[in-house]
Amino acid sequence: MVDANESVAEAARASLEMLRDDIAVLRSDVAKIVKNIAGSGYKAVRDRVASTGEMAGEYAGAAKARAGQMHEKLAECAGEHPLTYLALAFAAGAVAARILVAARK
Image (cartoon, rainbow, N blue to C red; front, side, top):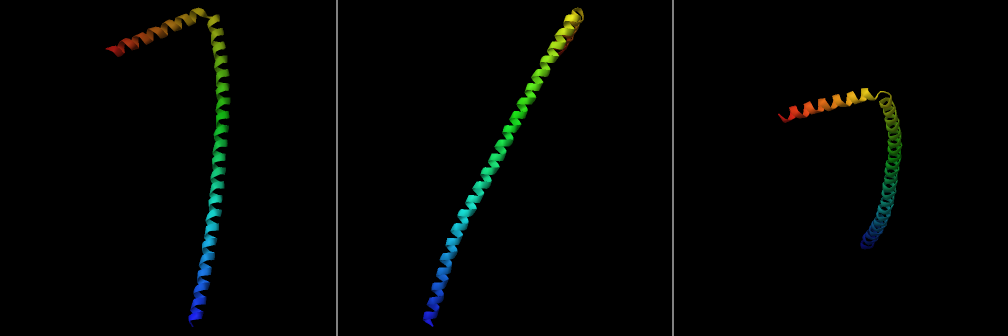
């Protein structure tokens, strides 16, 4: 009976050791999977940020071109009607001066 108990205990120890080994392998596999998922997530975020930066650069370039066109158009209009733009500038200055004087009181 003692031999039977010892053999059951030995079998239990062997099973326990196998289970520990399997858990260690599983832990290693899970760590690798998590590392791969984290790496691919980081890559996806990095790629998205890069594409967003490229889009922002394109929008900035388009806005700069549009601002240049508007500046040219304004200069052309001011050249065609210089007295009108001089009067507008004078009126804007007068309004700004009144606002500043009223703000000081």
